[in-house]
Image (cartoon, rainbow, N blue to C red; front, side, top):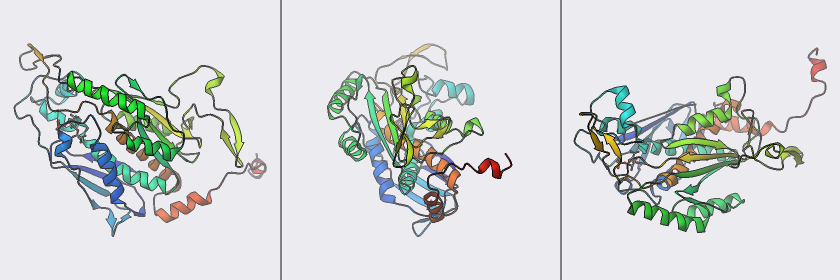
Length: 376
Ligand code: EPS
């Protein structure tokens, strides 16, 4: 699978092109619309989100509602224009402004925001929603939620998947712990009042992932290497940790085996479902660290690149926090990596054929005669 997302933050459209997706899968546009709404409508968002409707259109790769195997193109409309009209030469600390000017050298920092803006994640969520739906046909379910916002950490995570989703959806900050939600909402309001922005943490869990996705032939084939590359491409993500957040030392960190329903399983899942770059059949758990937004209501020390005189960083319309929408974006990111790994393993020709190959596989049997048969 190959994914391209283009489009300027304040241009006409965000454009998504997905190549290498199988034929014969029915696209559920309602699910895509719901995920776009979840990303758009979180607590802590700014004025821009009131201007956008995130209407989308699937313009290629789908015939009578079913994928054809051709590139799938999705357009998401931008309604808002750029509020800044004059040339800007004072960079915001933490934003791409300065670094991009050093590389591309066009004398207006507004140019770089068009690409570095998190607006393009609307496209990732649209295609990720389609891929989440696809993975669900194989029993794989993905949930993302906020685990920390500013100084507030969540304390309770329901173990039942449906309960986790239900509680997360009741929270305006997409956190499944109702008490922590209340505190997070207050934290956002306080940050807004003092002209501050908030970072935080997100967790994404994929349940029922079959063992054996990913690989080790080349190091970039490793599932965790792909997760790292995909997640670190999301704006404001500074790091990820796969598995339990508390790194313990020694043997207690390792997930011991047991036998359940005739197959080898684990008593714990500290390693987050991946060993040696390959899924091991347990939940894949990714913890994601999201930085505060670099456009702040409080000016920070900067420099005017035109004169090299000291200057204060400008305030432009912005969100107070992007952590809740980042949890929706991270679901999409994991869906892209897992769908790609699934297609690599079972083929990307026709949806029904690949479902059959997936179902027929069964649990592998240890073959004692193998080496003899192969002259070993
Ligand atoms: C963003 C700045 C804001 C956000 C935007 C990301 O946009 P603007 O500068 O037009 O007010 O609202 O987020 C989105 C548009 C979105 O869809 O998530 C930035 O600079 O990253």
